[in-house]
Length: 212
View 1: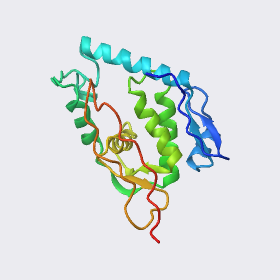
View 2: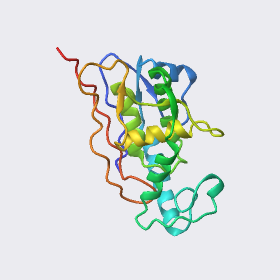
View 3: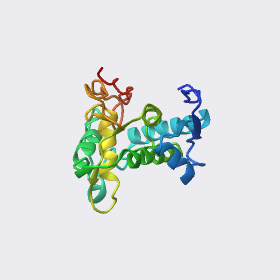
């Protein structure tokens, strides 16, 4: 993987650094309000890349929680998944059953910013492409549809599962102010490849222009 920083830039917009270490509450507000765009330094992407490769090696060497086993109460149950892809997708689908109204754009954008920053700390084992897709969604002004009611216990599981399914193309992207006409197209679902889930996210696309 290239160590190049992720930094598409729009003229005149301030930047907030997402590196897994320095994000402040004020930074989250700026990203949630779209008054700044995210910047992911090369060293943060490299750290995420090392974490992904380490998790992949461990998963191939033996059972790894959530990849070769179930989760929660089923953490001791081995999962046979020769292709290394179906288990992760099933987990997303089974946890994505939210209910109630969709959360406001600002709240969902704040969630995306916090989660992208957490994943860049270097301990998640996720592919860096998913992190840059979250940053790209913040830059473009698109977000997943997240319902206000989720699961009990770890309350963010439903929201994150809905976000994951959006990233791989199973759920649509939303815009802050939906325009008449087609919604932002997520493209076809990613083809799974590798241990623990899809090989790459479906990149978010810019909102469709308003109809004349």
